[in-house]
Image 1 (tube, rainbow, N blue to C red):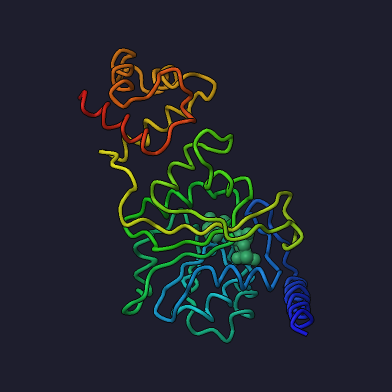
Image 2 (cartoon, helix red, strand yellow):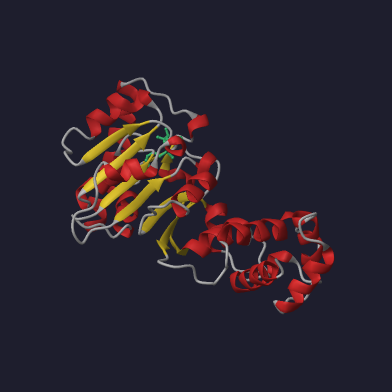
Length: 297
Ligand code: SAM
C-alpha cells in the first residue's frame, strides 16, 4: 500500500512537471545545467537530509521548476531561491503559488553577494542558515568555494553533484579521487554521502550519475594551518604535478619564492619523505608542511 502511494507520488511529479514544461513551451537549457529532478522520493530525501526546522533559512541555488523548493518550503522557515534563468519565472510562479515563505532572487549565484542574500531572511532564534540544492554541474567547484570560504558560511549544505565530484569530496589521501577539492571541502566541513541518484531520476537525464553529499561546516579547521591562503597555495602546488615527487611538485609550484633547499628543509621539519607523491599527504601533513614553510619566513 505504502509502495503504491509512493509510486503514485513519483508518477504525479513526473507528469505534472512534464505538463508544466509543455504548457510553457519550456526547453531545458543544457548550458545552464538544467536537469530537473522528478523523483518524489529523492526530492523528499534531499530536503529531509538538510535537517530543516521552522526556525531555519535555507538557500537553494537554481530552483528550476520548483519541485525541490516546494519540499524545502514545507520544512524550513524561509527559502531563499536564486535562479539565473528568468524564463523559468512563470513556471516557478505556478509551482510555488501556495508558498508564502519563498524569496525568489533572479541572477547568477556566483555574482551574488552572499551576505545580502542571507540578510533577506535571517533565521529565527535557534535556527540556522542552510543550503540545499541540485546544483548546475558546470559551476560546482566555484559554488563550493563561495559557500565554504564565505564570511557567513551555512551551518550545513546538502548538494546534489556529479557522482565523480562527490567521490572527490569524500576521498581519502592516496586514492585516485583525492585532490585539492577534497582538501578544501574537508578543511572547511565534514562531508558525508547521502545517496546516489541515477540519470533516470532527472528530466532530461544527464549523461552522468549523481550523488548527494551533506557538508557539516566546521566551527574551526580540523588542523592548525597557520595562514589558510598559504595552506591552499601549498596544496595546489602539491597536486599541480601529480606524477612528480612532492619535492619536485612544490618546487615547480612555489618557485621562485621558495627554493628547493628551503622546501627540503621544511619537508624534513614536517616529517614528510620528499620522495612521496603530493596526493598521499593528509590534511595534517599539509598543515605541518605549511607551518614549517611559514616558520622559515
Ligand atoms: N532545483 C531544480 C531541480 O532540482 O529540479 C533544478 C536543478 S538544475 C540541475 C540547476 C538549476 O540551476 C537550473 O534551474 C538552472 O537554470 C540554474 N542555474 C544555472 N546556473 C545558475 C547560476 N549561475 N545561478 C543560479 N542558478 C543557476
